[in-house]
Length: 275
Image 1 (cartoon, rainbow, N blue to C red):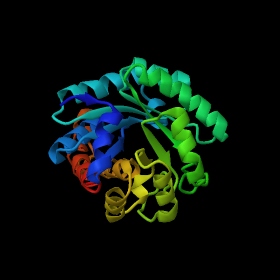
Image 2: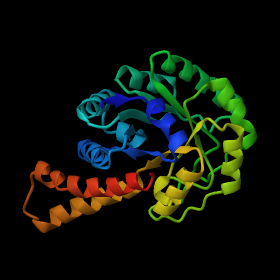
Image 3: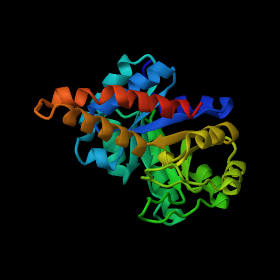
């Protein structure tokens, strides 16, 4: 297999009760580990470049890295822009070879979110690139509070934007270091009823216990779950162990290479929780 769009990997999930992991990439080591994990589990994977990653590495470099990994992989790999803040960033990602972009207009009034998302979807889909959007607002642990997605807005949003996937706020939260989030099942059911054929996305997957993730994807149209914090924690633990094991070592390639195996194991567990 090779590079794939978000739509290509999510559409089968609507039928088979699974979801694809959107794994947050910060550099070469985790991107490499995530693809290795997906190959070991024989599942697609979505490599995600979010704002934190983009602050340290140009989109063009990330696009080339994701494409190189995807073209050599034995499973479908999606090169995905996460939380794109405007049209210009989304277009840069498309030019850099990303196969999927997320435009995040969740903080905007509904009409403005629809208008901006529709323009990006029109431009991206014309080039064969999938689009994810967000309705409602997924907040941050010990930060900005979430605003639940309103089911009555979902059908209108989808009809007027034509997005391939929609991130929703149903109790999930970004940056949780423990899996204590509780899902609003009634809200999620109402959202699904409003747009039964729309692939839904949950950000903040690290806050959802693995068994809860599995239950959600088997019982709903959630087809993509973003997972970042727990994998960043696994990376930090592995790097700290490598440094402390032999404090006199200074070669970054040696140290960083020792994070790949632990990261691969952590990513495999995350991927398995969605099938």
